[in-house]
Length: 309
Length: 325
Image (tube, rainbow over all chains, first blue to last red; front, side, top):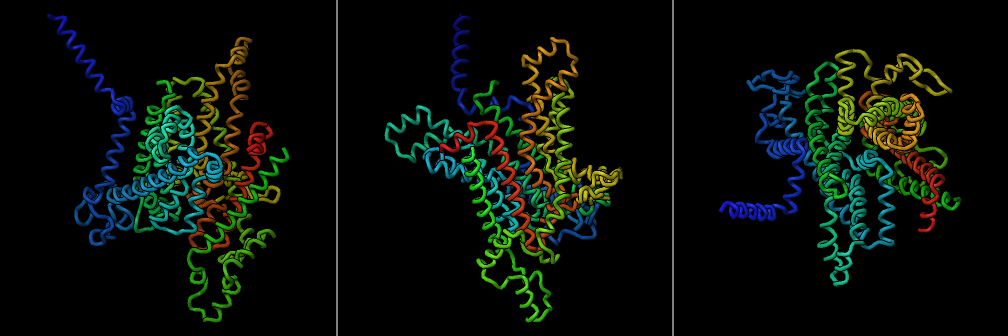
């Protein structure tokens, strides 16, 4: 009696493990094996939440002139405003609550970084797939342009473009896209070349499937993993680059303050010891970049089949 | 060999030409310099005279043609603000930028290699793990914010080091340098360290990976078995073999350091070409912007050309493959 019970339990366990082992579940369990990566995902989720819901969770709207009072300017952290609100992280030169300004800044920084990342990924993917799939002259031409661009640092390309385009959210997104697409194109081409020589692509070609079907249904899904890794790390890079450009005064206008611009605005007060105006936006920027980088590192470890784990 | 070099030089010339076209036409679409540079209270005659003096009345393709012809003569136009040749302004500031870049490279190597070698020799010790965590931070921290924090800690709170400018300079072979005087050195330290931080992280990782690989080789075991002191094994036998990749990568990164000096120069008010560029962009001083971009692009193309040619000498496969394709 007990043996049949044992067998039934084993059968159930086998059946359960068979259903559990979908690729997504395996990926998730591999991913969350690392405590650091789990913490990074949690931190990033909080940042994302703050960025999306900034207008609803901020103590004040820092860009509403009715709320902000110049009399409250440069208050150290913990001080109370004239209306009785506490400046948890102090206030800036115009009397804005730093915490609220950081929440709104995160919104702009993440928005610009993610948006430029997605567009650059789309362009890079299309170009890289075309280069790998068609080969020959198309490939040579595309890769010449990519190599040429990658021989210049991204910040120099972005500076050239912004000195031409001027300031603005749309302009900095264009500059970041142009500075980044080549990284995606190179990654996609590299892994697409490896996949293209495999048998399933040959089989699909023998079945006389259309180019479009082979590229989008067979090649693309197998090229995605390395692309996701590069996409994550590049997004962190884009956020950092945008902050740098805004700090230099060639990125976003004062009406759309990102974290970089907040830090830049606090620069003039730093020499008189009012550290909080630059310090806290910098910490927010740092936490954002580090958490995205840690997630990206773990994704690379999990998605790379060659790595012994 | 000569086929390869000729081809590479021709390619580089084409790139220089295309870049000059892009940069010039691009920059000339920004804003209207007439509004920016001429006193709005001047009468019509004065305005027209000023436009003629600046060459802004000609069609844009003619402006470009003069720019190109003059560029070949080494004349990249006159600054609207300083009324001096743009090239001269940039060349005046170049030594400051190069001094900063080389000082940063020097710090990256002098601090990075010992830390990396230590982390490679004892990969499981606590100190090594701290070093590696530090290098991750070095990659993630935005350069300009670290610079601000340096100023806050070392200049404002502790008051140990000055935060702006180059300090006292002395003349070395006709070039003004800071690193020969004590005052200049104290001004150089913070910006150089700031610029070095990113490359230092890179050097630490390269040195660590190299050391871990080299330490397992037979000749290291042999050197130990021969009874050489541990310090001699590390300093001579390990060091010699990890230096090759480190030097190669750093050579390639030199251009990046010069480009990133823009950020550090702005933070520390270091009077180099990068700060001149940022100031000129904000004042719409187009000749200086164009001249800076052309000089930097030229510098990058030369660096890439030299690296490619050196590689082709060291590794014949590179040039054979390129000639065939």
